[in-house]
Image (cartoon, rainbow, N blue to C red; front, top):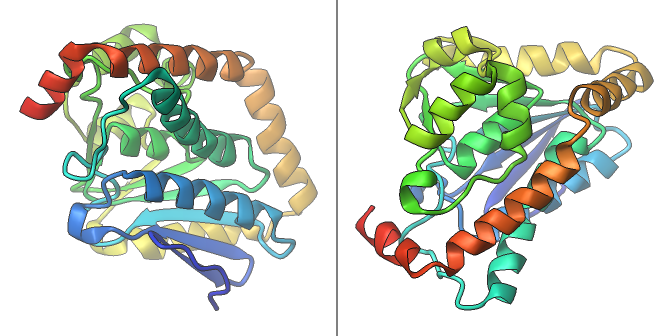
Length: 252
């Protein structure tokens, strides 16, 4: 059953599970403004839906999300434009991390930059064996969002987080599982079956306890989440406004 419509996100209800699929497969689900806005709205709609107990997030085609769409990217020309874009990205973070329903991620193919952030924002990220992730932001003279400056050190420790964020190394699913970034790794052809099974298992649990557990874990374990997002906004806006960024993004 599908009863929500967005331009770049498919939304389908399977019992108490709302399946959201990033749907720009011809661009490896790379992020443009429409996808950013659609995902935030789709997650908010799912959280507001009384029957929805769990959200499952995945990507159509060969990738989960290949990061910023360089061919459909309009570089902000002013601080106001830059801030508007970055705040839109952080609305996705708030929806995924601070929304009531737990989010199961089915991570296929590449998860790059903002797409890697969305994978990390999932409560139960399940990665396909061939999936890979990395952060190119620092090499492009921009900054990360997604509250990963708070979440990633919690998952992998500060030293490993520095490595991942400064150097932009590319990591396979098995290595991400060893670090604690991937919750579970499964064969590619079993990804959606496993993700749906986990989502349905969560949906069978008492919703009040599940929502309370997500909220309290995040409040207790990530007390500086809002501050991290605010600091990320300022750093990302500054990066967008630096002329060096335009050159590096063009050459990427």
